Amino acid sequence: MYIFRDYYNNQVKLSFDNHPFSDQPKHVWVICRYKDRWLLTKHKERGLEFPGGKVEEGETAKQAALREVKEETGGSVDNLHYVGQYFVSGKSENVIKNVYYAKIDKLVQQKSYFETEGPVLLESIPENIKYNQQFSFIMKDEVLKHCMDHIKNVY
Ligand code: GTP
Image (cartoon, rainbow, N blue to C red; front, top):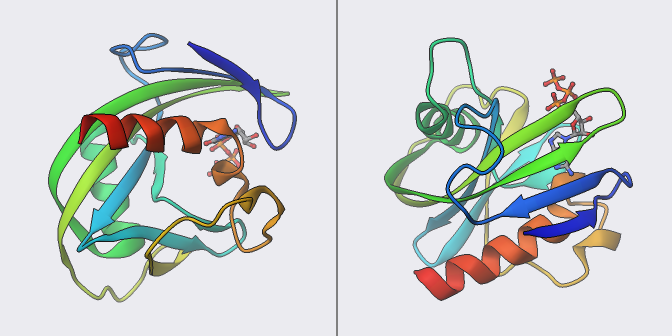
């Protein structure tokens, strides 16, 4: 288990065990790979981030992951792998989020990308994005680094 503070100084607990905080998390985040590039989305307010969002009523977390990737990037997921789960102790609420790793096999242009401006492909994730205004706060804590390390070791 890793424990650290996020960009807003909230405490975050991250684990690569099987659903350590909740079997039914309400949020998902999907680290996407398409043709040797990382596939992100550009959120209209937060900036560049891997796609994700809230699990809707009647949906499983995995279904939410597939839907969010499609909505925010136009990508269809070939393979979805559970990576880990994190718990953010927020000021007014707690957030439990599943992290997945997805291999994308097709990127199809969408009419709308919901709250985002759509897909952004990057060869690499720059160092020091903590100080890079283009990137979203959810990319700015240790969740990203630990998950990328985990993915590198497993896939
Ligand atoms: P909407 O209902 O979509 O407008 O969402 P919201 O802004 O209320 O946010 P959400 O329920 O997604 O998250 C509530 C709070 O949890 C956010 O303001 C953040 O402080 C925190 N949070 C959500 N997701 C993450 C995340 O991936 N990483 C970190 N560190 N904090 C997060």
